[in-house]
Figure 1 (cartoon, each protein chain N blue to C red):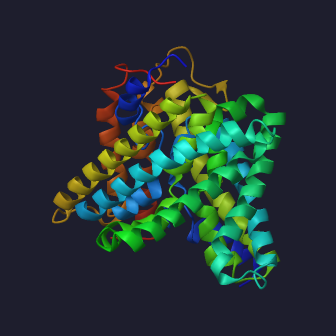
Figure 2 (figure 1 turned 180 degrees about the vertical axis):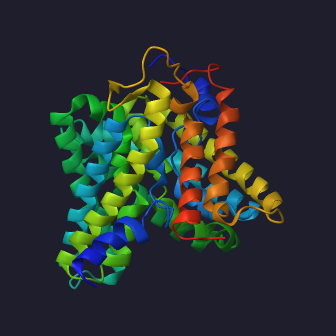
Length: 195
Length: 197
């Protein structure tokens, strides 16, 4: 519990990046990273949703699940909160910001099944974060995910013209790039240990 | 398709991990120890087979508009069962797997099989498809964790097999090796099994 929210925010981006060390959000990471533009859009949407769903799930856990002693229902409650929030956000964005809807809106349905969102809520419960820490962890994880997908998209754009063995094209080469990125991020570990 | 074909299709030809690149999160995260991988694989197979069976049972009564949320709730119910059983019977492993048991709910394999198979075919076929896909997933987990545990700890299923002369490769315990090994596995299978290129 000792770690401050500020430190946790940076730790979530660098030392324990949600994707590079905890492997969460791999599916959309691998499939959307073909273009830098859409990677940025999805990353921003993920960060935004993460901050709010982590806060909402924290409130739901502390004021609904714990008092009524139904903690075993946490998975269902978290999933419903995430799905409902994403649906609501989609309606609001479509109604009030149509331009934003056409750039970010298409990514919103993808987010419900992004395991990074659900995983951050589960980590929050397991590690006993308080409200402020949860928000900092959500924001940091989202930015960390954004950083990872942007780096992969940039590298993949450069690789488009290169000769890659047929069997490695697509997922294979992306995984190797991600492995090298994860190796680089190990260099950050120890700066701000998380837990 | 015969029952055997459905099983083999799920486990090998249309393997969720190496062919469809689904469920990568947990494939990478729990594979540093073989025992954890086996338990995770069995848990996922259980949830996948039974949720496919249930989704297929009610496939004709579920309106299309609420299909997704109904499928998610059915999956969540079975995952909660897995989680409670693990917490009661194997508390140590449950603690090590941490959030990844709960993350079976958002594992794309389950949604993928529900959409691609269980919502179209009869319950028994869906059950077998679920067991097949679960077996394929468990197989990949065991292959990767075999290499990671052997080189990273010098042991298999927690039993020391390499003597005191062996120096553990700490990279095998850390995250990057999981990415590299999965990439190598996909490469080898693309070349040898699917004969790409």
